Image 1 (tube, rainbow, N blue to C red):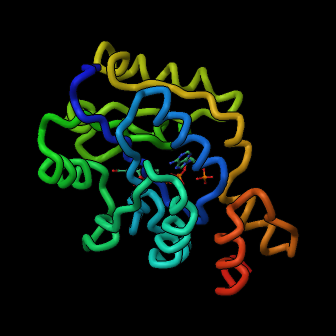
Image 2 (cartoon, rainbow, N blue to C red):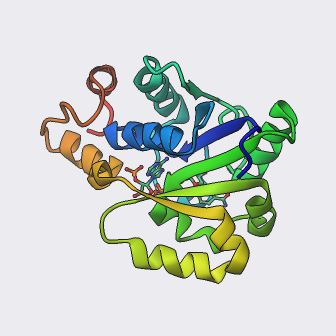
Length: 204
Ligand code: NAP
């Protein structure tokens, strides 16, 4: 990893909804890898979720903007929302390289559970040439990540990195369940996101 290149973190996720675990993870990666900024990119149509009900992208985008607003290093992009079709990461990376130039080094940050499926991602070998992957691990999923790193051989060892994030005990699934059951989500999501969920009647 070179020192004089601009370094940009890409925080990819469905963010349904964004929560404190995502924010703590992004900030930890920013500091650990000396990133110049982190761009949160809510997935519009996640390829692996075509059979699942996902909250309309506009709500997820607005919550992501509100949650990240106070951090001067955090930005949100709507590139996957404004692109028709499925949200393939390879298309996003190609777009960002054309925008920021080839001298920029990209770090794609996401959950280790998502990285576990990396071999099935669109044009994954090409993707591994374009960016580093930071797999945010919940306690207990280290060994499966090792298998994925081994699967990709030397390129996997160079390009896939892990970051333990205890705060990822929080999950979007759990938050949706809590709202459905009328339980509190205070301090698990930023206050602005909590208010937005309640006002818009999401996850009931
Ligand atoms: P997911 O299957 O909803 O999430 C898998 C796990 O990772 C969940 O436990 C999730 O927790 C966690 N997670 C997701 N994003 C995270 C983040 N940024 N930081 C920390 N933990 C995170 O995965 P997803 O959110 O839909 O997809 C993750 C990213 O991978 C997206 O950018 C998506 O577009 C990309 N992806 C691309 C392809 C492809 O190009 N073919 C295929 C699959 C995924 P929470 O539910 O709490 O977030």
